[in-house]
Image (tube, rainbow, N blue to C red):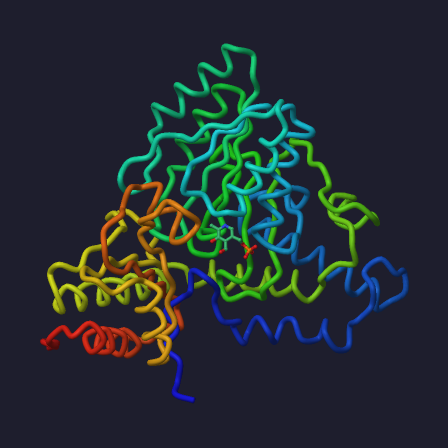
Length: 384
Ligand code: PLP
């Protein structure tokens, strides 16, 4: 098999070998159940609590605010379930471009006739209209309705960023509960979660070179939390089930590495992103981008004009060993295509592909992708 050119790091990243090394002893020698009182059990328990403290310190919060979960989906579900079932929220304000882990969960709770939801206005890049958020909160609060606001920190398809602080200030002014899906940003920015007024924030380990099936939910001090999974007393009775010890250790190690190297990695990944953008524009000035200037630096969402559909272009890239993903303009309004493109009214013909980069992407990968795209789309190559 030819070497893979992996440009889909917003979907998942490869496990950092240093993270694997930290995890391995807990998959081999230290297999004790953390709830057991003998030595190898205690060893597992101590490692979990050390990992929790590491994560909490890196995110600028207390250990008691960090719950380990199976990933972003579970964290989002737990936050929304808590707001609705325990915190008295009967109206949910979210956006049409959230990940399905939020949108489908909101839909699930809004099937209950006592819970309503609304979408905040977005501009063409998916940026939140803060005036509209405030207007909506104002009218709900005046009617005596308590709100949950669930807005993602960065969109996973086009990278649009939310101003967490501004959104948090508005939510707090109206006594709303504020949840942010930070799956694409925790591990990519040195976030200090206590500073933004968020009650809940979700993260996922596999987005920053940690293991799959690992995540955290941050819960601000004094905010109650309701279990989604019932059973034993693990995770302070919030998340039952024998702990994924090696996963928790991997999550913490990956976050530590991400914070240690954040600046250098960001500069490097920005260079890759710019090289891809410039290279594509050299192929054709008609190629356009869905990201705004201030977007998450790991993603580049590209529109290729012409008749080739997203799925076909992705399949041809796959045949050439290039991994990327769709984000195609939805022309029919059905389930086919990207709900993000559809919500933002980007319904042009041609393919929309998301390329996403990591610290392990090589500049040579970008060159191969551009040369391959030139061949598939029959653009003349005029690379320097
Ligand atoms: N939220 C966002 C923005 C994501 O990009 C993803 C993963 O693609 C998720 C949530 C789900 O995270 P997980 O795969 O850890 O369940």
